[in-house]
Amino acid sequence: MALINCDKCGVLMIWKPTHLCSECLKLQLEEVNKVKDYLAKHPQASMMEVERKTKVSLKTIQEMASKS
Image (cartoon, rainbow, N blue to C red; front, side):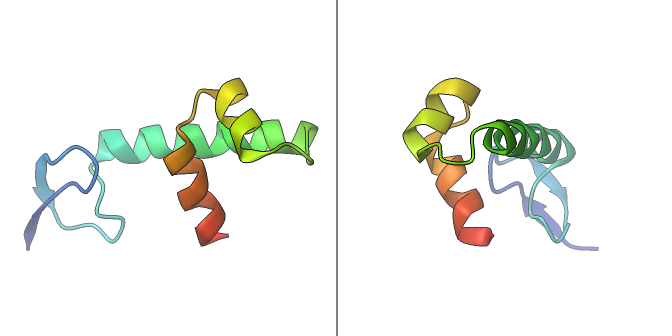
């Protein structure tokens, strides 16, 4: 059992493939769902528009885009 720090908040935790603690993972999933829901209704939206309308950071949106 390896201990690591959460990539987002730094809390000490048992290793998980996501490298995120439970709270940060929950927040990330909420943000993903906000962005997905917005883009489903506004498929031509720019990243800046998605950021303004969902309140999800541009950095997070860019990370989502790079993983898709």
